[in-house]
Image (cartoon, rainbow, N blue to C red; front, side, top):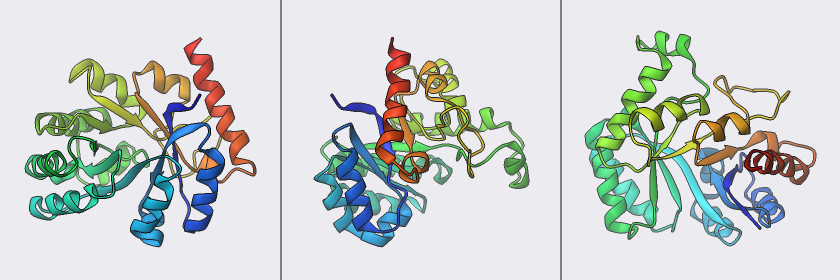
Length: 234
């Protein structure tokens, strides 16, 4: 049986390798995430090729004036996506226009996800950008903007998933990147957690990329993550 909650981020540049990896992992997971590097490399064709292997989460963190984002969502809706990300730093009106476009052109199939604070950032980084609030306060403020503008899904680190569920909207879908097994390198991720911690915090979907895609044996590493989910369930 496939695990729907674990999303594999195909952090690769070469489209052919991404499709091959999706083929290898598709018996075990339902959804693959496509980020900027792969989308710029393969464009619409890579999305179409990967859709034969599973559902697609297009992670572009769209950020522009409301009109441009509305049109971008309209165009991307034609790719039959499961998830698409927008940056909540674009503000309330931008989010509202994106939500409206998704509803009008994807027939409610597409779930827009509002990205709060990247897991590669911590409070020192926010300070350098002139943001005086704590990471948790900043995430909550951005999450509130997204929810009030009509979003039903958010992207946040496992550390803030519980705060969102407890303080804003228990029913909102929270997708958490920045997951690592015990002892794994964090790379450029700073606010990381384990699978168990993320699920305990209320995360609905877990995103794992380089720990799997860069592993000597991606399938074996994927199975380790699936085992962690299974152990949490029991």
